[in-house]
Length: 361
Image (cartoon, rainbow, N blue to C red):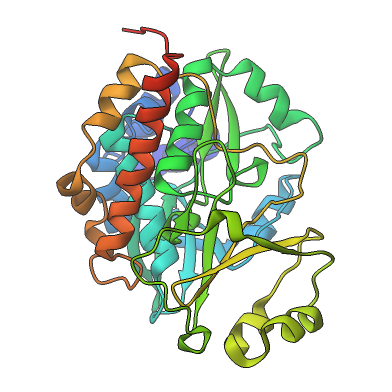
């Protein structure tokens, strides 16, 4: 009975898995949940956290939108997302996906594995899992009182975070192809008065894309044999990009007709921006964020020696390890992995030519 009372007191008195509780709080929580480990971001590389996420039993589950709104947070996302509490004290975010298309989940897991391999940025531990017959990604939930979506908060945080950390976030986004970046995919936390950025919602990593460092990427939207481009083996035609102003489903249908699948028109979102695109290798490639003057590109003039060495160490063998869980995913092709290394080479070449990176030990 005394153990049960102690457990109840612990649950009531200490926030489970804030991710940024002080050391004493983490010890108190751990005493309540013997299986639990310190989940501070400095320990996210600890494989025990992933093990606990995989093996923990769900004791409560509610829509994430409902949970965020109950705490006064904004909920700007799509998809079937849940706030989950496990019997080992961990809180997590579960994203349910169709069993025949788990690419987004594999990308989320790979983003975490890439952050461990490179040493940056801060991506919460993420695993593949099954919950109540649903399959998807399960990511450690990070508590924060700061709402990144409020006007000016994200920009202010970028000025507070260490320059190297901001640069590393941009470099990670560029090299691994997380094109859908911004305050909606960032958590801002204060850790012992230090501002930290947490990169979440990294499903954009799964998309094939073509890009030049310092420019917006063209993301492959769909493939169609009807396009008959006959340009296999030819370089990506950046200079042939076209733009449709004020795009609608109707204007796109007039432009492309039946050369694109019906699913493209059904899922089209304009975002209130021009539609800039390229047709290449029987595929439609879209330059998202084109025309958005407020969008912050994944570009930096800062590259530390630490980060340079980490990028130089990235190779095909390491990438295959990073994408282990995605080995059967349709997006994981040799060309996809080669594109990551090509973007990495662009970064290293840029800084070698400009010699703008400092020497940080």
